[in-house]
Image (tube, rainbow, N blue to C red; front, side):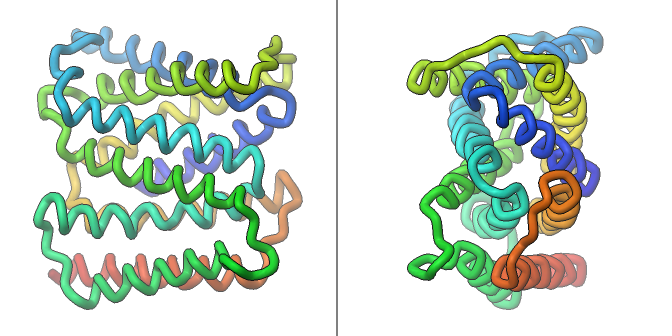
Length: 275
C-alpha cells in the first residue's frame, strides 16, 4: 500500500504537469488507453483471458462506475487545484473504506475506531473550510473523486476471485477512455501532445500501472481496515512533490487538517492490530 501511494503521488505530479498543456479529457483517454494495453499484455503473458465472462457480473460493473467517478473527478481536481490540497482531501478515502468495510463486509469496527473516523472527517472539513474564506467549489471535485475511489476499493474486495489483478487493471484503466471521451466531447479542444506532455504521460503510465497493481494486491489480500490507513502516506509524498515541483505552500489549516487525518488513521491502524 505504501508503494502504491508513492507511485500514485508521482503519477499525479506527471498528470498535473501534462494538464498544463493538454485537456483533461485527452489525458484520461491517452493515460487510460496506455494503462489498459500494458495490463492486457501482462495478462496475456500469464495466459489469462483479457475479456473474461466475469466482467459482466454486477460487482465488476459497479466497480467500473466507481472507477470512472474517481478517476474523472480526481484528475480534474489535480488539474484545477493545488496538488497538495487535492491529495489532502483524498485522504478521506480510508475513512470511507473503513466505514464501508464495517457496513458492507461486516468487519468489526469498535467505537474507538469509529471515533478515529469521525476525527478524520473533522480534519477533512478543516481542509475544505466550508463557509469560510478560502473555500472554493473546485475542492468538491476531489471530494467526489474520493467517494469514487472508496467505492472502487470496496468493490475490488468483493470482485470474483477468478479475476486476477492484471485483469482488474485492464478493466479499471479501460474505463478512463470513455470517461475522457465524454469529457473531451463536452469541452472540446483535443491537440497533439508535444514532447514534454508525451514524456509526462509515458512516465505517469509507467508509474501508475505499478501503483495500480500494488493497490489491487493490497486490497485483495489484506484486511481492508488494516491496510487502508497506510493510504495516508500518499499525503506526505504529495506535499513534498507539490512544494518541490509546483512551488506550493500548504497553509496552516491544510496542515492542521492533514495532521488530524493522519493521526486518526494511525490510531485506527493500531486498534486494528491489537484486535
